[in-house]
Image (cartoon, rainbow, N blue to C red):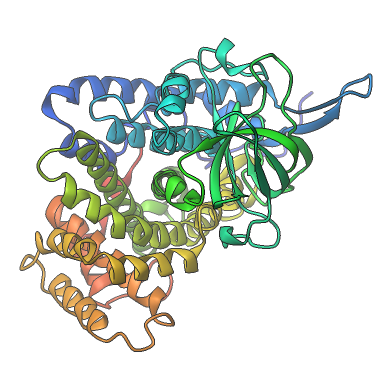
Length: 550
């Protein structure tokens, strides 16, 4: 006879079997806003298909399994031969295959490609963020390779392919390939000019042998890598294939895999180069300049990825509060919980709106013509500012959303701990907070057209909200005084990002969202923790807008 000590009640059903894309109003409205009318139906159809896949029980199980079964390094085969392979759980391959198949490495050559790809990356990251690392680097490698037309002609069709082919084989034998990068070294970290890896030229033009150690090599199972090394002419960018054209394996010795806080489904490694064959990308001595567009593209993905993690955190919290009863009613109807959820929803929508605006600017630049120069200048300042601020907001959002689930959120089965562990990564990857803040200062000092472009952008909303107008004036005051500017850089970048978010919400979000954002983030009517919004705001409408289903 079955035990009958209790009956399970008041437990929240899982958030599953829903369309991640169409259940997100900020996302769908942003895609509609920035899409060319002729592309909108096609874009909606592909994102709806991906959104339904992302919300399925099958995909969510893939995400859990890929993280519960992290990759394993095999340095040698059974006979003692060095092979340097990384084994992944089948769920990882399912996730990565769907990413590639959905075109998440294909933005540079199709109409509206950056917006469509960013929205898809946003949707699929909510299933599992680790597979986004090789997807992001593969996408971002294209502009760097284009500095060498011969390399681009050879590799770009493989990188933008919608075919995922795992396994180490010559790239020429594969319909689709993935790219990683290896820039940082243990003695330098973000200071890549301190790299000591050496590149010795061979007799054949553009061919080199590399010797050195890379402290962080992202996604070591990829087919090729962009690597920085010291050539006779200075720091230079190279392409290192894992497998050579004749089928032999390049010297790519994986010393160990990193034991990371989060992002556990994805492999990050330390690697040794010892006479490793490489091809020149760009010119000798111009490695940073060659790779800078790749860095900018991956920084945008940091913004998109963090916005996606915030969205999934908020979706889970609102869903839980919708179905969980306490103290005589549903949590979502309790004024204090509603305040917390609305505050989280504001942060999420502001991040989403900014990320899509940046992606649309990439499409304008890609298309050329009127507006391209202005958008290029806008991105130069807006990307590092957004990367700084949005990625830093991700961790407190994930932590507060977890708390909305109480003890249930602290349990692995809820999925919230995985979101929390993942949340700091994008703030570190591709340059941590200080690196972004200093990059903003560099843009302000060297490229005045970048500031002009951002000021024109926020000026589109001037006069619509007095708190936004006051915040814009405050930023201009900060910029007028350059004394101690480096020590004040974080404060300046934070305010710049908030003004940019506020201007976008005032122009495009519902009035209740823009009002709450400006009152709290720009007007100072806010506490130091989530759930401290002014009680007079229309918080119920803000929360309802963030509801993931229904």
